[in-house]
Length: 249
Image 1 (spheres, rainbow, N blue to C red):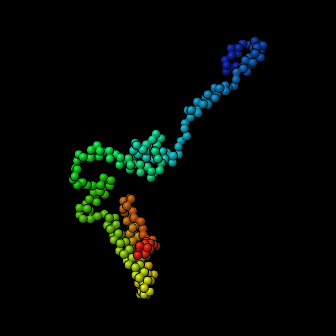
Image 2: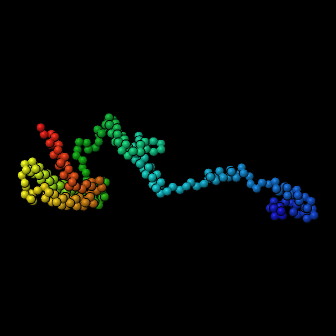
Image 3: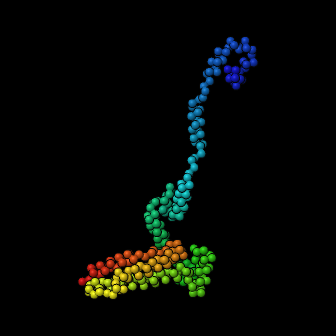
């Protein structure tokens, strides 16, 4: 009790013990009237603490997704934007809408005559370099072009296309001979039979696919080629043969 009174700095502490004893019950009653805590004040403090609390941190994936959405919205034309993001979330739909917006802008520019007085109109375009390529690589490509050379992947692309064209021609010729032999009932030499030629065609196609693997490592992104399969090429021949039979009178 003495400690409680000292905290409140009760003035009667300075009085003598004999003076304090008669009024002790009243002091106890007075001190007990103070509540331990006001519920309304505590609730207000709790609400303030909730409002002032620091929001939960987002995960790395959520932050990356937020940045990606903002970049996508910034790249999107204003005609396709809305308050909380893009008008459509389907990538194909968004691409189609962007193409439509581009065509509309071009048509409006043509009607306004903005393409009539462009510098160099009617003259060939002089392309001295590729603005999208690395400056060092672009310089190397220009030096090669001036001396009649091309990058390795360009030459490799020509070689692949030439080889696959010859390979398909040989495969088609062997297939035609097989069909003629089957229809006429004439036996072919063992080394010219269709079954004997298939391993050779498969080996040649593997070599072409190896060149395609190397080409895909050298070529810029977006120009990669698909590998060829013998089964798919044979199926193409069979399909074309069936179509010829159906179209024949």
